[in-house]
Image (cartoon, rainbow, N blue to C red; front, side, top):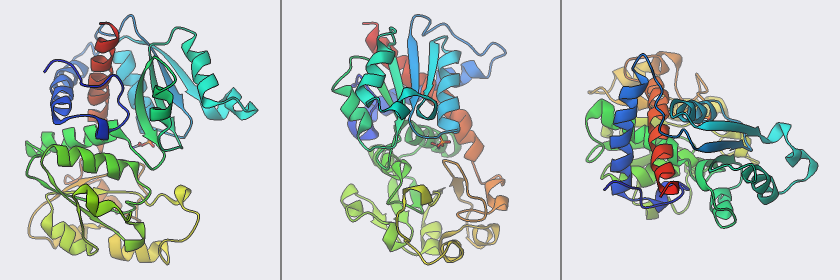
Length: 309
Ligand code: CP
């Protein structure tokens, strides 16, 4: 297969295993490029990309911008906090105004689940979802799987546990879709109050006991508690959460094998993982960030080649 089955990347739910394989093969080439002394290729020289961030971001925003620049695209950046959205402009009006400046692709982060799908019904440009509320974060899941593949050789057949605030996490949902498509075994672990009711219908098992989950897994993807998406308390205190669901080096050392630790960032050090875990050789957190650039270059390149047809 030499092209993606989709025009937009709105979620892992909408793509196939073959799409993921193609993205990873393409990312392998771009990873080689970005480790050269000259890190740039002219692949997207005629393409203009707008990065529309209606919600805060460090990693995703910088990673997309760098990926676009490494591909020689023209890039414009939009941050809702400093825009006319504050004066009451709608999402469609904002985006149509930006597109009238001859923009080909839109990378969008938005607090509302489904914002990318909604936009795709109203505009012609290709859209990449950079995180929509508690729904999906497809490029994060792709870079996570790419990083597992890099560390362990393959994703298929691996035991992966996603630990923490599953209820509010777009990273969890996109990872579940991506890992299942590639044949991994997936469990979720965390307080029962932070488990969506539908979670088992996605083909994952719930394990409430962290030690049991860690004993089972090859990879633990540790998630942050998303306090900004909570309007009530889901557990008695942060201290109690950490006692039950936090990972420290003593816990890892007490296992009879070495597991891989992942985290999408931002980390709340001392809550879901301690610094001695986050900064250890078992953690591939900065490899995930590094791989994010190559994976996003691959996604943009493959979507752009569909525009050019
Ligand atoms: N992983 C992630 O999406 O981080 P940011 O919110 O900083 O982009």
